[in-house]
Image (tube, rainbow, N blue to C red):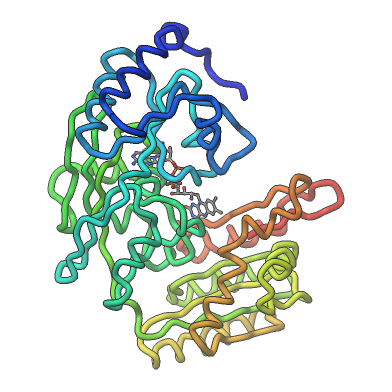
Length: 384
Ligand SMILES: Cc1cc2nc3c(=O)[nH]c(=O)nc-3n(C[C@H](O)[C@H](O)[C@H](O)COP(=O)(O)OP(=O)(O)OC[C@H]3O[C@@H](n4cnc5c(N)ncnc54)[C@H](O)[C@@H]3O)c2cc1C
């Protein structure tokens, strides 16, 4: 892949650097043979591959601090890595850089139901947080589709979101504290268990900084009580424009669904082939709208959404009747990438999810743009 010239001085010192890394992280925490480093050569943007200088898997904050100070003092580049599910090449190694893999930081450190917080090491998976608290009726809201694999540290670095971020916010709205190591090895804490730390919003700067400002070694997030009721509605439309207008009208009516996603005809077909949950195949666009809250409120909102969809020409409406069915409705959307696989390499799958478009015009315009994604050859690209 095209990339900046490698630092020959660093390459020349590779043996010495590997030996020093072994002193800082004894045991099996240093990987330096070509074969053993192969699993780390790419992230989920698999078109790009590059072996790192060396892979280091620290286990303590003190080790991370020593590695970063060592590299900073010697002008050696460092690429932090969580689970390697980034779709943007953020965790792609550099040939002259230490790949700092955080997967051994995999423990939940504190669960505080009274203050509704969980403190975890950064290698804990996103879903691991919900799994740790769901028996008490709590969950962690941001839910990227990669949540069984992606790490909470990676979520902070990418400010990740998911289908429930429309109502509950992105990682930035749910992370309240981090411990991180700056590139010179200094350990700092931003925020804590409390909401809204005083002073400059340094946590806001850190969240979404893609590992460029420091390495996260601990994360505190807020957890939420599971809503009393959550039901999902499948709404089919004859055109993406009508579905897009329905999105705008739902937001315009002051309704903020727990989740709202759109798929066009190729995406519906790809998803149905993969998960077989009964998505309608005779529509051009499908909205999945989830309403949550007290039962009576959910019933009322579903009726409103159904009426808005009707005014926009919806041709099908199916309401989940059980938790299993609600999960099944989301299964295709959540599996969008594997769903698109059979269409690759001829097709690329276009994810256009952007919960920040939470205004009626923003959401509608965004969704209406679906129909304008160009075709690849004679096939239309799946869009969601
Ligand atoms: C099938 C699939 C579905 C996806 N769905 C979504 C989705 O719905 N929403 C969404 O937002 N994303 C989604 N993603 C993208 C990806 O999962 C997220 O960006 C996720 O947050 C990356 O986490 P990770 O642990 O894999 O990080 P990595 O891929 O390992 O790293 C990502 C970036 O974070 C940095 N980083 C990682 N750990 C740390 C740390 N401890 N300290 C500092 N920097 C660090 C890396 O340097 C890199 O820049 C999806 C990916 C896949 C493969």
